Length: 291
Image 1 (cartoon, helix red, strand yellow):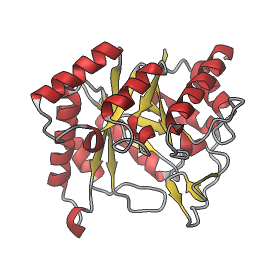
Image 2: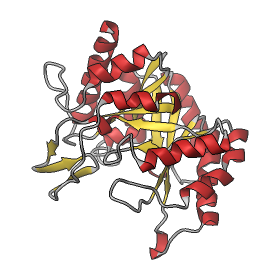
Image 3: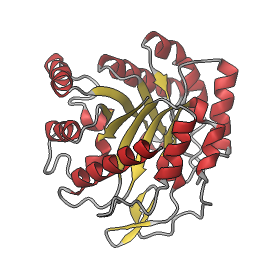
Image 4: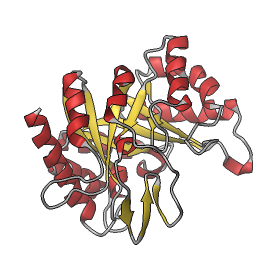
């Protein structure tokens, strides 16, 4: 079964400015979503050691709004202090986030590490560190799922290394997070500059071939969570950047089950994220009804 969620990253332009955490979570529930994705450092008060009162409030809020924690974003800063992070340090960071994610009711942890190539190959520390926390992930019933994010492509060394890790370890606690920005067919312009699929800015984005949705067939069995990245849905509920129809048709045909967690990265004017999230959910629901 496909469920609908939202990443609080969608509210980046307003969180802490015009919207509180409560405001964002209330908006997610109001638009009809049931899944909630967060970034640990950004959204957990006094991270990584929230108070008992904050945790109690977290679960009370989820219960009242009928929301389910889905994916917890972990930042593993492999260049902290201007030097490479050691494996022991990476293990410590991952362990901290796995324990906190489990404490807050999450099932998936998305580790974000520093990268060493233009196509986002993660720091080599990822593999030994991840292997050392697999037992903890199993004990906490957590699946670690690195993100396939533009300009990575599906048929790449980055993804091949993840698949080889799954095969070598035989673990059920490591999978893939698919970011739909990988399938973007056109560039989106934000704030007067080019919005590369890594954010905005005036620099030239990398030259990356368009990735056909059909490539997803190769890895879908290992995809445990989807960040439904998007930039703009127009007044006619059309998305001119992400090919939702073919993407959703493939999920339905393959009987994929999981959460589509909306991640808005378009213009961040006041109120725009809330409106765009509603448009995207309306579009996705319509397309799934037609599939």
